[in-house]
Structures are given as C-alpha cells and as structure tokens.
Amino acid sequence: MKIAVVGSGYVGLVTGACLANLGNNVICIDNDKKRIAILKKGKIPFYEPGLPELVEKNYKAGRLSFSFDLGAAVESCEVIFIAVGTPPKKGGEADISAVEAVACAIAKELKKNNSKNLGFKVIVNKSTVPVGMGDVVTTILVKNGVSERFFSVVSNPEFLREGSALSDFMNPDRIVIGASNNKAFNVITELYRPLNAHIIFTSVKSAELIKYASNSFLATKISFINEIANICERVGSDVVEVANGMGLDKRIGRQFLNSGLGYGGSCFPKDISALNHLAKTLGYNAKILDAVSMVNDDQIKRFLQKIKKRFKSLKNRKITVLGLAFKPETDDLRDAPSLKIIAALLKSGAKILAYDPVAEPSAKKSLPKVSFFSDLYQAVKGADAIVIATEWPEFKEIDFDRVKKLVRSAVVFDGRNMYDKKKLAEAGFEYVGVGR
Image 1 (cartoon, rainbow, N blue to C red):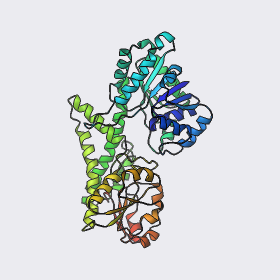
Image 2: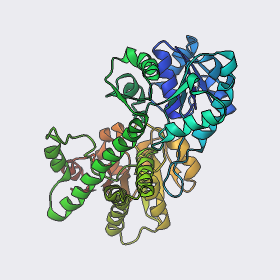
Image 3: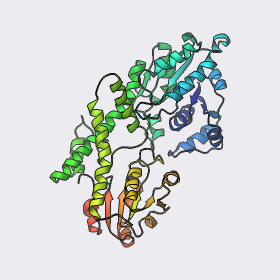
Image 4: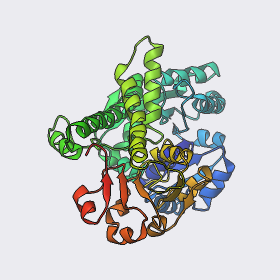
C-alpha cells in the first residue's frame, strides 16, 4: 500500500518506519527542509531505541522515503496520515492550527482529484486531537471544494511510549479505528492486518476520546499512588509495599503505581489539560482531572521541601542531579520534573551538577547554569547531595561504595524510589525517598 505520513516528528517518523517495515511504500512529509535533509542522511533528530536502524533498513530497501512535496505524496498515496504536533495553549486546549493547515494543504491537492480521478483517499488523524476534529478536517476539505465521494477521515490514535515506541507499534495492546464508513474501515484494517492485533472499530469521536481517556486514566493512577505515598509518610508505611499489595489485584494492576516525582513528558500533561478544557467548554467540571494535575504539581514542591529541610541553607551547596529526561530511554525534556527541581535549587543558591546518559545535548540548551558531566562518578564528586530524577536502568548498578568516597556528604534524595533504604544505609548513606 502507498502511504503518506505528514509530519516527521516522533509519532510520524515511528509510524512511517514501522509501516514501511510491514512492506508498505511510505513517504514521510515535512515542511522543515532541514529535518528532511537530516533524515535523508540517515540521522534521527531525537532519541528512540532501535529507530535509527529501522529507518536505515527501510530507506535502503526503498520502502521509506522523505520529502517536502506534499502534492506528489497526496496524488500517489491511498492513505494519508496527519501526524503533526498539537501543543497546549495557555488555556489548556490543544493547538490544532498545524492539523488545520495540513488539512487545507491536502484539500488543495485533493480538489484536483475531482478531475484526475486519483481514487478514494483515506485521511487518518494520527495526531492527538480534540473530540470533533474529524468533523473539522472533513469540513475543511468540503469547503475547499473536495467531494466526500473521494475521501473519508479516520481517527487512529497512537499509544506509543517514548523509549519503547517500536515495540508498542509492532505489538500493540489494541488498534483503535474510528471511521464513518465501511470502505475506510476496510482500508485501515488491511493496513494493520500483518500485526495480527486486536482491532476496535468505533465512531470517529469515540476514537478521539479513547486517546485522551486512556492517558488521563494512567496519569490518575500516578497521582493516586502519590497521594497514598504522602499518607504513608505520615503513618510510617512504605508505599512500595502498599503498591505491590494493591497491584496483585487484577482489577487494579501494578503498572503506573510507582510513586515519586510525578508524571512529565509531552503527553500526560497536555492530554489532561485538553480533556479538562473540553469538559469545561461543555459546562462540566471534571473534578478528578483537576485533582490529578494538582497532586502532580504538588509532588515537586513536597520533594523540594525535603531537600530544603535537610540543609539549613542551599547556598553554594553542590547538588548532583542524576537523570534529566522525563523518563528513561528518551532524551525528551518536555515537562521533565528535573527541570523544575533544578530551577528551584538554583534559585535557592545551589550549584547543580548533572548527568544523563542521553539527554545531555538537549539539556545544555535550556540549562546554561548547570555543570554537565559525561561520567556519572565525575558528576557526584564533591556533592553535598544526590538527587535521582529519572529512573535510568544504569542507575540501579551504581557502586555506592565508590560514590561514598567521592561525595562531600552521603545523602541521596531518591525521587523515583529506585533503591533499598537498608542497603544504602549499610553503604553509609542517608536515604530520603517518596512515601517510605
């Protein structure tokens, strides 16, 4: 099948590479000519394990190509994915201007379809968009003179986790296809048939809401266990033990019951805000969504209070922050808890030393006052405290006996509850976790 993916960012590039790997002929389109040039050289503008190799493999095989010529792609492709950004506006609602712009551009090309008889086109909203966006895209096309006989708009939300996106795409829990006619359903179903996955057929609006509801529920689990963690600290319980006990209940499950600094990244904060904004525009007060955001914001403040309580003054204190990305296996710093922690510590007069195995290049641009190190043990040298902000697997292998000899003060503030308090105590460290 010939496919165009408009937008070569995280979702677009992963989608394009994986569909090409399934044997399709895929053109990734982007209006950023520099990005297209980079991709043609075999370089990936962000970090995602396995993606460079997959892109190179399919590019060399001729199944994956890159271009800024939308017209040619629309003319030749049967399926057109829209995978552009929908960042939050100040009010919390999603900025859909990029999706609208792509829809207008596609409309101009499809208008030629009326006379050229290029065949039926399926336009797929892969971007995370507000409920009703399928209707918006359809209206844009019709107003620009495109007959509905020549196209159908489908919602096919993505459920890709940064750091495991390829696995999530190739081995999905489910594939959601929201469409208004059987012809579009059949085209997208055939596209995903090689994955042998569970496919859910819904209306377009239900598919759009499934994405927001899923991410909001996962964020709710994180904020809930952080509420429990705050209670644990007051009664003397260990939230890790509590979460383990809860997670064995099949109705609850253990995933996303990890207390700590809260969620970050580009998805959860944005999607919670967008869904909350939608509810308010409809005259509904989504109290749970408000609470989820409030608890998440409070986690950073509570964690900082622990650091400030331990030291009478943070002025000129050397604090080593281990982990900068919002989660492991990515270099994404969007809404990363580490950034808020570092900003607050710098404001209090502390000197920040930092190490992240992947995110350092990105972090240097936004954190000019931070001293970066390419070696973890160099980063902790002379530190008054160590802050764990991202649960990178390599941090579990830290030689704390070696670290003890390098630091000025053996104090660990574990924002991800990675370590056993007793073992660190045996190594001579003072340990401060979350809800423990």
